[in-house]
Amino acid sequence: MLPVYNKIMVPYFWVGLKLYDWLSGTKSIGSSYFIGKSKTIEIFPRIKKDNLSGSVIYYDGQMDDSRLNLMLALTSSYHGAVISNYVEVKNILKENDISVGATCTDKITGETFKIKSKGIINTTGPFTDSIRKDTNKELRNIVVPSSGTHIVLPKEFGPKNMGFVFPQTSDGRILFFIPWKNKLIAGTTDNKCSVESNPKPSNDEINFLIDETKHLISYPDDLEKNTILSAWKGIRPLVKDPSKKNTESLARNHIIEVTSKRTITLSGGKWTTYRRMAEDAINKAIKTFKLNTKQPCVTKFIPLLGSHTYNHEMLYRIQRDLKVPLKVAKNWVSNYGDRAYKLRDYIKNDKINKISSIYDITEEDVEYTIDNEMAIKISDFILRRYRIGFIDVKEAYYMIDKVSKIMKRKFCWSHKQELVERKEAVESLKSLGLEFCMKKH
Image 1 (cartoon, rainbow, N blue to C red):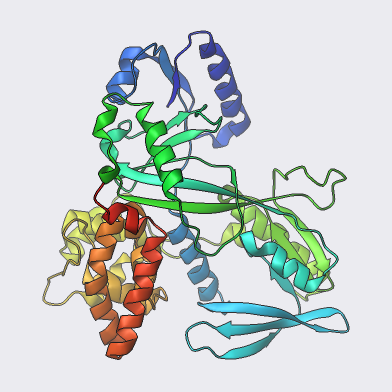
Image 2: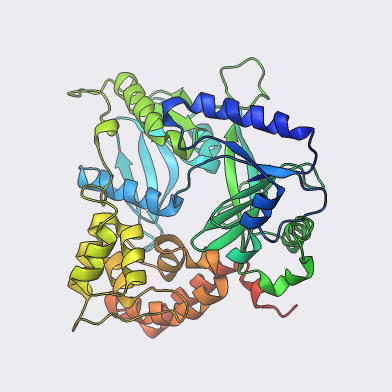
């Protein structure tokens, strides 16, 4: 939903979005259209009504980036890739100025080891330049990190089953409301920032979002600081094309760069084109590294694990066959696809055990993700396998105790190790606004 508060702007927005529809071609997921003031208010009862003319509705897609990223890793492993979790590249190995591998450190055990390779593909997002310069110190930085801060609110503060975009905040940026996991994300983008592993939103950024949101809704006093469920910050690694004369212009698409002998950098791009990015990078690697392969990249023919027999009836089949509540079945199908049937092995005496008083998350989930999804830390589960920390940081904090007990039993943690893991999980939640949300305002 794009609100219109000036009738003169109606044709401007409508034509712009129709052009967007046209560019989508046959892959469009829905045509944009205009609705009047009364229909806009019906969909978004809390919208600010003064001078409202109506709104333009357009379509976009949504996914869970953490789950998709995980399933990509698991699918690659299924097809023969060797994947290593919690392993950090310390430096690139070279022989005669040719990249031949990397020195790595296991972040769990502290062990350092070397991996030899025929070639290296650098796909490290915001950290791209550190690897590029390790292979070739003469290269200029290409990453332009841009941060976006988000707060999570109860869904009632936004439109019903619809996102919302306001194109002009007080500082000239875009503010958006996105319905996500039965909550509402309010956020902005495009703030210049430095690169860090766990970016944390400042109180000023959180308060800015609260104030801007209040300007767009009726009864703004209902939105208090205590209403915020979580607050977090992400880094978007925009890139400059090193092949262009204008070294300051940002690339609109992904970039593949041969940064040194036997090293390729893939940067830029976006989730919606990740298959094309993979295909271009692999085909470039085959040529650059002179690999002896049977065929070019085959990503377009490989479905992700969990999708092979997935359909819209699966939710009810899981509920019936595994004898679990509908909401639990919905979680399992949404997270695991047809792999949800594997949860059968974790259900004892036809009974599941919830670990949250609010959400339908179970002990069986924790055990499944440990055995099948490389979860080895508390934060793996509450942040990355389930996104509870991102949608309700206080509830994620309260879940630490039960998740910790399961992991202690599965991994045979000592009491001392358990305390270390719990402390680390709390530190992770601090980057999601734990201190702000726990504070009585």
